[in-house]
Image (cartoon, rainbow, N blue to C red; front, top):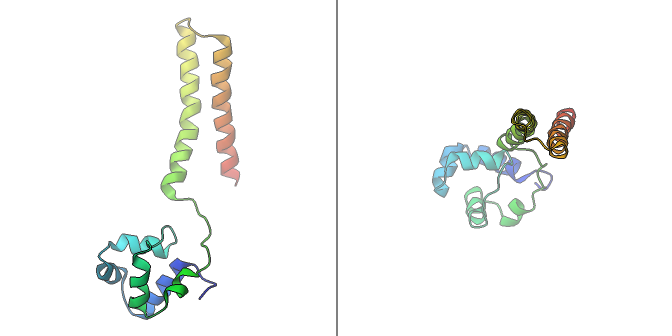
Length: 131
């Protein structure tokens, strides 16, 4: 089983036992959403839960622990938050430059700094979109 991630192992073992995520969750006194996250390699069971899982599935703790590392993936919430920030900062910097300019309080050096920060965020966002 060592060529699979822990999530893949847990999913396979659960299905072999004919269990649903909810049934496994109920046995562990956790939510089915937690089991779903484990199986999708978004989260891992805590150290107190692993022996219980091994017992339920009839495998050793070592078999569960020696799973290969899951590929690192970016979670939806994190990626969209970063994207929003990278879009919002240039707008905020542009608005700040315009307003302070209209109020006659714009220092040229500060204006270029704010526009530079905004352009850097735009550049980072564009590079992320290509990746």
